[in-house]
Length: 91
Image (cartoon, rainbow, N blue to C red; front, side, top):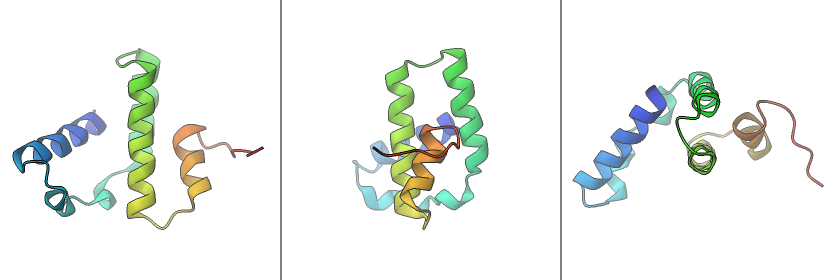
């Protein structure tokens, strides 16, 4: 599961560098296959490896990273991460 491995690397780098966020600038989100991450999230959710709250935290983190590191529109990011690619209708 590359997603959890990636999150472990992020956490380890933060711990090793006394939680200095500048150390994370070397990691690039562009090196990550987003569709594979989406598949892994769906697998984790289906296999109940993590609680629903933990999965939602990972989804929120992924949405934040996509907003920060890409020029994708926010609605597209939310749709990709939270609604399995379906368009979200905001009321």
